[in-house]
Image (cartoon, rainbow, N blue to C red):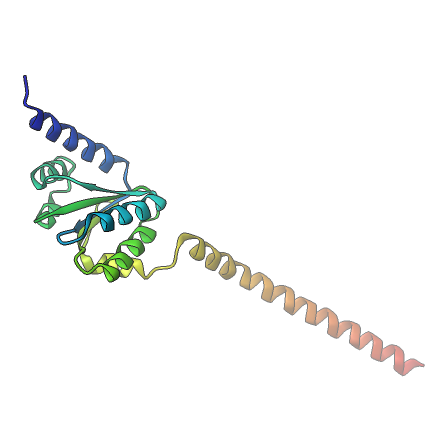
Amino acid sequence: MKKLGLVFKEVSENRIKDTLKKSDAVFIVRYSGVSSPDLCSLRQTLKGSKSSLFVVKNSVARRALVDSGLEILVKNIEGPCGLVFVKDEPVRVSQVLCNFVKEHEQLKLEGGSLKNKVLEKKDIEAMSKLPSKEVLRAQVVVTLNSPISGLVITLNQILAKFVYCIDQIRQNKH
């Protein structure tokens, strides 16, 4: 019979592996010095962005990362760390984390992974400055619509000049 602590570690490790498979990205944060209510507040904010913060023993996190093929991230697991799993919109989650870091300097971004690409702290900060998906989609629509609008305006001006020319000919004949 296994000890309860070993069972808990195995369950935690399996949960991390399963969540990593379902996640688009994972960010590692160091939360030393952040109060429990502030961590709860961060969890609630992340929940609204379809992501979650998971705090686990470092040894368990290291084993799960190695087993998931993310051994490059193991170097970031040091001290009290948490894993932020992102299911959708990593840009939005990076914005949430960077805003939280501004308000709570004790929280530190350590790095992460986005679609199996390793991210450093500066990459996450750069990602947080990108516009959201909706804004990017709107910009694409405007960009695609711009040449069509220009063509319509040009054709309208040609037609208006033609009508003006016909009107001038009509006035000269009278």
